Image 1: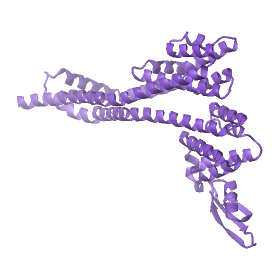
Image 2: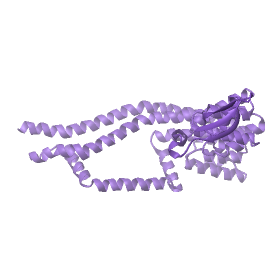
Image 3: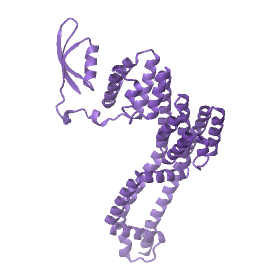
Image 4: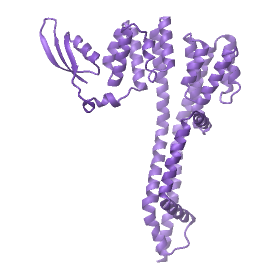
Length: 402
């Protein structure tokens, strides 16, 4: 955004001009930084069409939060006052939308609010897990350590997510391309090509060619019906999946998928173990730690398990008793939690378990990346071979007969 201003310097000299900043407070800070005394300031933005599109569409993401957390921890470690550190970061942020958020957090802190209280006003960016750890750091006087751990935690999460996206990007692109090419072939190319076989009167067609002709005829004769069914089916599945019952069903299916199910299960177990360990180390009560972790885990099945565990602990029981009832929780985790509960070192046990499951998931992701490519090449080769043989063999027969 642009602001027109009128100001004077320390000697009384008058200035006026235009300054660019994400918010009015930012513009004032920039002018003060130049040694100006602001007399008037107003926005030059007239309507929606003259607004900064980056401010509208460039929303802050997990990467922005990681950088913000790491930089804030560094500034606090350098003995910079919290409010000043937040003001400094608001000038460093690239995205105007996130600059506005950091500026508002800075204003809240300068107004007497705690950092955790200011962060809690943005739950989409700063999870209850994040806010609780910051609050624990404020209470213990170890805010810098809490922020450093949060940055490490978020970076690990982002790294694993990027590895998963990287492993799935290639197969999803290939499968998507196959669907598009197959649709174009069936709807536009094959009908014109297969009409040659009909007009030639050849009856002794290969099985693959007859199947191809049948599929092509069916698709073209019922194209709008198929589209309507696909769209209606997609809407129905989407509405079901976003429901509570549908989320449980979808999360259950993903855990049963070959190869992918094992990777996802290890990721969820690592997240549960690490989150519980971290919260308990930060002197968060065990009930709060379980509840926060249940909101953080990202799988309804494991969320329900943790909520059952919370209820059992509230009634005087243990987590391991509940974990032992569910097949989704491996015996290793159950045993380690049981030992930790007996020895009073549950956070120590959970920390080691989280490292094990994280290592397992990362190894499986690497293996998956190496396995997917040859499998896709093999499948594509078979598909191309069937398509080519279905078209070329009859053509060879037709040319031979001529």
